[in-house]
Length: 284
Image (cartoon, rainbow, N blue to C red; front, side, top):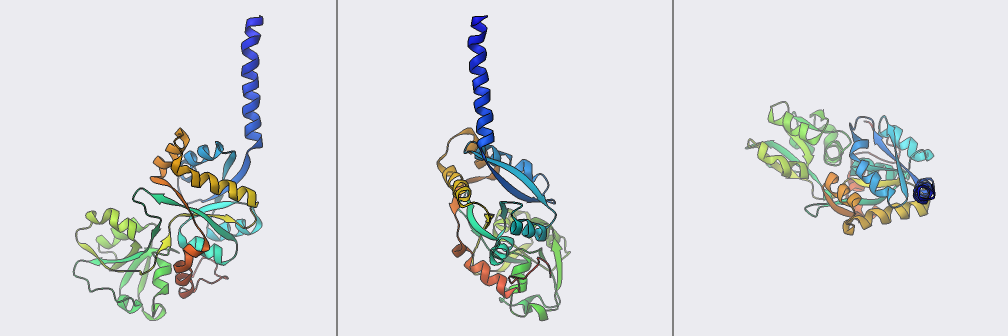
C-alpha cells in the first residue's frame, strides 16, 4: 500500500500542476472569418505553441469584416491574422495595431498586385483606362485585388466590368478559361502557379509592397499581453521544440518579424486612393 501511495502522490501533484498552468495562462481570443473553412484546425499548431508560452488561444468566428471591426472596437476579440487591405483599414479606423507577420521559406514578408492577361496583351500603363470596356477579375477588399483596381487613376470612369473571385487562384482560373479579360492578383500566387497558365502573362504590377498576413491586435488588449504574444512569435524562428516545428511546417514559414504602422505606408496610400477612409464599412 505504501508503495502505491509513493507513485500516486507524484502523479496527483503533476496533474494539479498542469491544471494550475492552464488556469494561469493568459487568454488570447483570435477571430477567424466564418467562410475560412478549417481556420481553427489550421491554427491549432500555433495554439499549441502559444500554450507552451502561457498563452491560451480561443477562436471567435466573425461573419464578415464589419463584424470583426465591431468585435475589435468593443474588445470582444484580441487579434486577427489579415491581409494588408483589411489590416490597413482597421489600423486607419484606430481599432487595431500591427504586431508581427510571417517570414516565409523564401525570406519574403511582403507582396504586391500584378496584372495578368492573355499572351500578347499590351503592357499595363498604370491607369484604369487600360481596363476600359474589359472584364477584370480580382478578390474583394484586397490590396492586390479590388483595392488596387479602385486606387488606379480613372477607376470610376473606366467602365470596366468588375468580377469578384473567392481567391487569387480562382481569379487566374477564370481568366485562363476566358471568363475574364484580365486578372489582378497577388504576385506570390502568380509566381507559384504561373507554370499552370502557359497562355497567360504578367502585363504590369504595383510599384509598392504590402505586409503579408499581419497579426493585428485590438487597441484594447493589455500591453503586457500584446508584448507576451509578440515575444512568443518573434522567438519562434530560433525555437526547436516540437510545437514550434509544427507551426513552421503548417504555415510554411521560418518565423515572424516585427511589424509596425510604417510597414503599411504603401498600403495606406493605396487605401486612400481607393476611397477606403476611416469611415469605410468594408463595402462599395
